[in-house]
Length: 218
Length: 127
Image 1 (cartoon, rainbow over the protein chains, first blue to last red):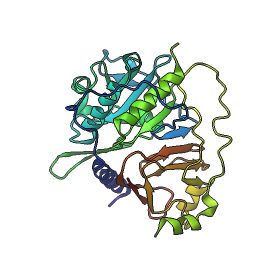
Image 2: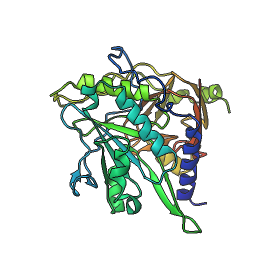
Image 3: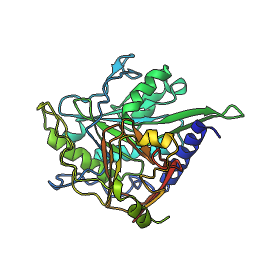
Image 4: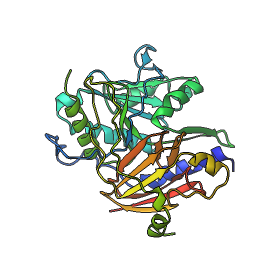
């Protein structure tokens, strides 16, 4: 087994193992509790890399806004939440996007409006035409992006630490493996926190609340 | 291999307090910041300069254990002083970066580890 195949196998194993972590309950219970404050000494629940990596060097093509260039940088005082995935994903992608929607619902409206959701496809050949509808089935104003240029996609993913691989099986089936993080980017194009698959939505919401509260409005 | 045995063998990899983290921010522009994440972590590791080259050369460098058992609420911090990025299970730590993470949900992760001779790490998070 070559290194790349081995990496892919491990990534799949990681994904499957983490899938056992479970996710948030379906939205069938009482209304989602909105966060009103977080402790001043709270530590972010997601992964923090310091110094915060600059993820803004490479742009991708927006599949939502007439092929405009998507920059990995939030609007002033806001957050951009980025996910690298694909629409045919049977488990991790829809679960992650659902958890993200629940996290957004836990934010006060004036904060959730300051979060831009972006999904980047790692499977552009199949996703370009349908990505916007897919991601907007979770977050109505979300944006889809990607590129058919593998080098450009790799350059965009590298500073995030996002990994992916597409392999065609013996019967022609497409197998995609990818990392399952949601990434939060600030208005300087810096990756400020990353949430692994399975991070509870209340933790992601509290992180966003904390970050947006610190950022303030500009 | 138990965690405690690994940790005992890796005293050199323990990380000093991260007083220097984030100290070179040249901009006072408003923005969304992570704030001070330098509180002590239960599991701290240092990837030293030259670690990647040493592993490439076949040196038996073991910076993190092959198996790491942690509990929800505990934290890990990995300082990468090497001149290349490294992957530790789900985490990517760029060159000269520090990664901090508090485990928030139980589960088991098997993933690539570029700083262990076996090439992989099993990370178990217990409730």
